[in-house]
Each structure stands twice: as C-alpha cells, then as structure tokens.
Length: 495
Ligand SMILES: Cc1cc2nc3c(=O)[nH]c(=O)nc-3n(C[C@H](O)[C@H](O)[C@H](O)COP(=O)(O)OP(=O)(O)OC[C@H]3O[C@@H](n4cnc5c(N)ncnc54)[C@H](O)[C@@H]3O)c2cc1C
Image 1 (cartoon, rainbow, N blue to C red):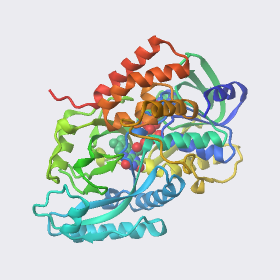
Image 2: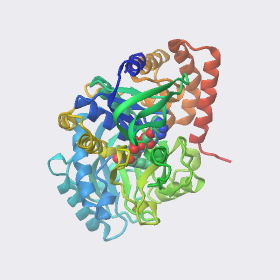
Image 3: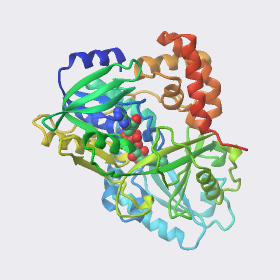
Image 4: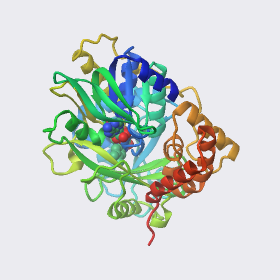
C-alpha cells in the first residue's frame, strides 16, 4: 500500500464504481470484495484502519456458542462456515483454539456436552475438531490454574482465534493488490447528490486539510457505531438504528492460564458468556455488555466493568487476578442494530443492509467472523441496485496478503532496537502506518498487550518514524504526548 500512489489515483480517477466510508472489518471487507470483482473501488477511513471496534474485539473467529443458546441457528451456521473459510484464507493470523467449559455443577457436563456436539455437527466439513468430555484430571492438566474445589471435569471444544487489527491491515493490502485505493486519515464530511441521488462524497485529508470531491456510482456506509451520523448526512430526519454497547477486555500475564487452552464461562451473573483466552503470551479476559450514550473512537472502560470481569473470572481460578495484575484495558463499541429488546446483550449480532431513498447503501451489525459474507452480500446488493456489471464474488477462496509469511511481531518488548527499526520502516512503507499510535496499537499490538511497555517504547518509535517520514522534533514530541494521552486509559487506576 503506497500513500502517494493512492493520492495520485484520487486525482486521476474521474468516477469510481464503489466508494466506501469506513475502514474497519466491514468497510475493508467490502473494498476487497468489490476490487476483486474488478470494480474501481475507493475506501476512506477517518482515522487509522481498524481504529474503531475492529481492533477491540475478543479476537475470536467463532460460530458463537452463545447464539446457539439463544437459538439463532442461521447466524451460527453462517459464522461457522466463515470461520472455516477464514482459517484457510488467513492461516498466518487465525488458528484453532481449544476452549474448556469447566463443570462445577452436576448437570453441566451433559448440558454443555450435548450443546457443543450440536455445534461440532453444524460446522460440518469446516469443523476444527470434535468436542470432548474431560475428567477433572484432564481438565486440570490443560488448565492447571482452574480452581480444583468441586470441579467435576469439563467440556473441551474448538473455535478460532485471530489478531483483529493485523487482519484488517492484511485485508486492506489484499484489496490494494486487487486495485483498490484505500486511504486512512481521510474523513468523509459530506455526501454529494444529483437530483436527490448520491453521486459521491466530499472528503477531507486529515493530514493536509485538503478537500477532495469524489464521484462514485455507488456509496457504501460502513461506519460501525458511526452509521447513524452518516445516515443523518443523507437524511436529516433519519432516526437512529444503532444501539451502541460497550465491551471491555483486561489483559493479564500468561501465568493466569499457564497453558494454551482457554476458559469459556457459559453464564455470568448477567446471563452472558465470559472468556479467558491466551493471546500473544498474555491472557485476554472479557467481555462486558454495557449500553452507552456517547460514541467515541477511544471508549474508556468503566470501573464497574473492570470489577465485573475480575470478580467473575476470579471465581474460576486459584489465583484471582487483581487490578495491579492488569497489563492493558481496552474497550470497544458494538454497533448493534436496534430491536425491541431492552437489553443490549439480546440485540441482534446479525448484519443489516439498507438502501436509502438517495441510493446510499448502509451495512452494519454482524461480527468480525462474518465480515467476508457481509461484504459479499453488500456488493451483490450494490450491483443489483446500479447499472454496474461485475463478476460474482471470488473471496471464498482468496488467500490474503501475508498468508504465506510468518506473523508480524505483536509484542515488541524483547526485540532488539535494530529489529524494531526494521519493523517500523516496513509498517510505514507497506502498511500506511502514520503515527506512533498506529504502530504501537495496530501494526504491533503492544498497547493492547502491555500499555506500560508501549509508553516506554513510544519515544524510540517516534524518533525512528520521524527519520523515515522527514518530520521534526516538534512532531516527535507531539506524537509522544498524543500517544501517552491515549495509553494512560489502557492502564488500571490503582488509587
Ligand atoms: C467488545 C467486543 C468484542 C467483540 N468480539 C468479537 C469476536 O471475538 N469475534 C467477532 O467475530 N466479532 C467480535 N466483535 C464484533 C466485531 O468486532 C465488529 O462487528 C466489527 O469490528 C465491526 O466492524 P465495523 O467495520 O462495522 O466497525 P468499525 O471497526 O468501528 O469501523 C467503522 C469505521 O468507520 C470509520 N468512520 C466513521 N465515520 C467516518 C467518516 N465520516 N469518514 C471516514 N471514516 C469514518 C471509523 O473511524 C471506524 O474506523 C466484538 C465487538 C466488541 C465491541
């Protein structure tokens, strides 16, 4: 991905087939789908790729055991199929993860055992392995930190785990390889119309302040929790369709699981599931489901949410994690599509595609796991709604950029300065990394793994980036200060 080439494309391309607003999983997936069908595609992300919800997930590529409990069979089938496809197309970022549902009550083994056998069957040929009933001894062998008191064994099952922000970057790179122009730090500020129909967008380069008028045959709104703000640009009378719900995660040291198997707690006090999953030598604990009013690109975990996770996961472990054990806290906002239910946990995770009077297409809801199918459905609808001719979707078997290479280092704590310098250079040249935060939060995952280490590394990263990007000392200082302002919210308040 080369910024200057993309900027030149903006100047030279008279009219685009597809213009996408939003560079999270949904928008990037749509860009890849469209470009790989041969469509002239441009995508604008107001911040960095995956800065929003798409870097803040639980990192599971899953059918959703919880949706099975809720009886949402269609969603589970679709997600299990997508899980299998993603494992084939991005094997460098997605892997088969073992989970155990620990059993402390007499009925749990048969209840969850049967449910997970159904889950296995639903995955069919794309299954990741059979679920198994485990004895107490075998359960403790796989998760030695589980509280052994009253433990009656467990049920083991398989799901996928991935690195969300890295996947977003690789999808952007694959879309670019197929001819798409994908720009981060470009904000759509207005929708242009001719005779009431969308004809393009007005977009502002956040680095230079320059405004571009972009003509496009079709405009797709893929802005997650910001969906309603774009829909209001289209129609002032638009009534909100998104109910944002915050979910937070705590990251603690790997010793809290002391192995490679994750814990799935099937029912918390508020009727949700909770996970403790090994990730890049740490453990991710989460999540919560808290309705919120304010939409922000840097949502902040509430004290009650942190206490909730520590309390619930602590019930299952011999050593209960304390606030001082937290290495990083990250919060994300679910773009849930409004339903009739009062609780956000029961709102649909299914995706919704709508076409407005002006012919703007909005795609929202869904989950990371189903991003490819959401994209396929969106571009199919875009084609059927316009005169654009293109081939059918090809992404089911399309290998993503990076799938033939080892993973990018997520944790940079122990890599040498010269290695780190090379990583920074690569992320600028090939991955459109523009800020210290881009590098520490999404090109690597240091901020999400250990915020203190990320803060310590920020001055070195800023200095190397300044050399590469031809920036001065003032830029270095403001980058460090901007980063520290964000990173402090990833640390627990231990007062
Ligand atoms: C706590 C939590 C845990 C989750 N865990 C999982 C999981 O384990 N597995 C799973 O499959 N799914 C999971 N999900 C769901 C998944 O993360 C989301 O469904 C997905 O990331 C949504 O992607 P998106 O592209 O729709 O939204 P976003 O990632 O938020 O992207 C929208 C983008 O639009 C941009 N934008 C907004 N306005 C403009 C504008 N005017 N101009 C340009 N750009 C604009 C924003 O900056 C943003 O980057 C989880 C979600 C949450 C919140």
